[in-house]
Amino acid sequence: MKNRIKVLRAEQNMTQADLANHVEVSRQTINAIEKGKFDPSLPLAFKIAKLFERTIEEIFIDESL
Amino acid sequence: MKNRIKVLRAEQNMTQADLANHVEVSRQTINAIEKGKFDPSLPLAFKIAKLFERTIEEIFIDESL
DNA sequence: ACATAAAGTAAATAAAACTTGACATTTTAA
DNA sequence: TTAAAATGTCAAGTTTTATTTACTTTATGT
Image 1 (spheres, helix red, strand yellow):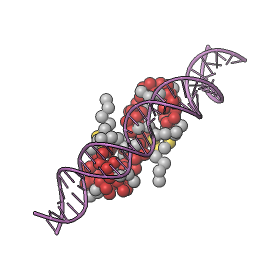
Image 2 (cartoon, helix red, strand yellow):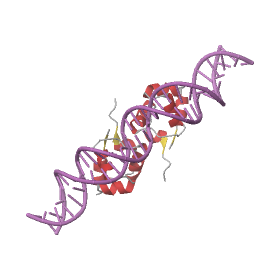
Image 3 (cartoon, helix red, strand yellow):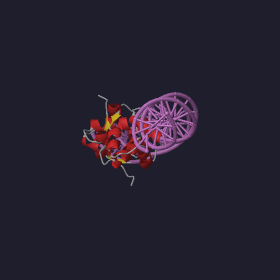
Image 4 (cartoon, protein in one colour):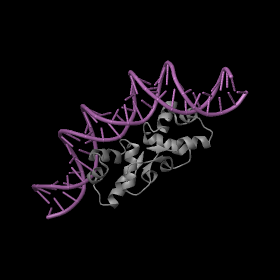
């Protein structure tokens, strides 16, 4: 699963730590998600989407056929 | 987290087992998700959304403030 | 009423999200 | 150019929770 978190962060001049604080996870969790090391839980995906005022599918790109 | 899976299933005359087969999880997993006992993983949420040709937010309703 | 399909639930397991801490690399900007 | 900030990474551990297996109850149709 890929995602556009990095660009959305950039648009808001937001650091990984900033985002982590806002959605209440560790900085490393954001980093790992951003790098595609694992997927966020659905609730966390919603939190992130809400913060960026986007839909989940606008942020996360499902790569399964 | 609530969801509209039950109605979407009904619209398609689909049983929990049918849906489970399509998205490759156990029937009980669908039942538990449907009853709100837990949330699906993000990949599973995408699978379900794709099957019903809906967006994730059209199916899953985030209740966090 | 009876057989069967469908749905519900509990307990156990498996899996994966998430944390912590530490350190290395890259970017920023002063 | 150098210090600080931001990012990347990795191991190891915790903990949450998704998912399964097995069993019970309810609905459906004949």
